[in-house]
Image (cartoon, rainbow, N blue to C red; front, side, top):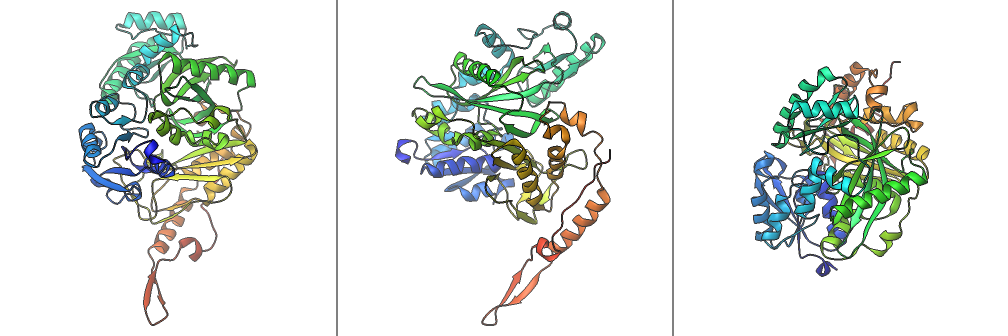
Length: 505
């Protein structure tokens, strides 16, 4: 089977997404090459691939962002394709260009489509011409304060200043009155310059209390462009998604059909090929507006896989190899409900400060309809050099209520000791009455979780006790007189318990 696709795929990433790509290649019988920095020596993804090569020191621009080193590694080890995952080089058009120059297939869209869709101003212009609904605002980047003032008055306050060249909340400012405009534009330009090397910003109408809805699209080189329904990504912290689900409780069949057609139209207008995601904002009246298109596989793609049965990474590989989208994918339907929680190495009880250290004990939840995409295991060392995502926990159930309950139980069964995670915070979100009612807006955390308090003394005492137990050793006498040193599970040693927290109302 592998001969139909590629001889060997270089996985230009790390962590859980590298593991996801490696597993998809295994399914297709394709050997893989992992790359790793010196900080990731011995990492799970480096051990899981058929081959692995060190490409530089920890700073990303000297390893995972070093296109020349990645291309050299691909050529040295006989790789004829590169999969970028998400993050790092996944949306950098210089990588597909370098691949093309060196006779290597890039598993993703073309550099031209990536450039167009990576620039929010240019993509807005293109989508306006294609008839895709847009948020009112500038059709081009602002060059003077007067242009911003004019656009703001026309759109009406509040407005949003956004960086043209990036995402993730960088270079973004909400402006609620005219006296805040000048300062906000200048601050957004500085932040955009620092984050993306480009201080181009533009203005659009700020939609109060929206939902963030995205549609998964697939396009091949045989004239097929389809969508695989929506994902709701409204639970966000600092403009970063932390909980995603599908189907969305906000979409009627009529709105779903309209948004799906618009998503396909976006991909077709851009000449897009491979997997991508079209993002929209949905207002409280059912109006929706094109936000941007992500030219890569999304972090939250597993929820789509859980309700449709499609393997999106396998489809990426097949499309890149010149194959059409699989026949069964054309007829998939949404079955049941799926939720994903991102497991970050962050202290959810201390303003989500990064947490680093060694994972002393690691145990994933198991059971029907539970999936874990992980890039760590017991003994993994978590640094601060890279994105703090450790794993993704995904559940599937016949309906949303059951999916919520399954996710809460799975989070409680997820054991990670030695570092702090945001696991407990997500349990509190899922248990909140507003979340259970399906009232999930992008302002959910600020509105509903601001007064959340926890018993930090209890957490500290229990964590200290568990850390002490995890360091214990137990010597057992084996048959034949041998001695075996065993590290007992702290959960078995101290009996069943969990870190409980109480929300003060």
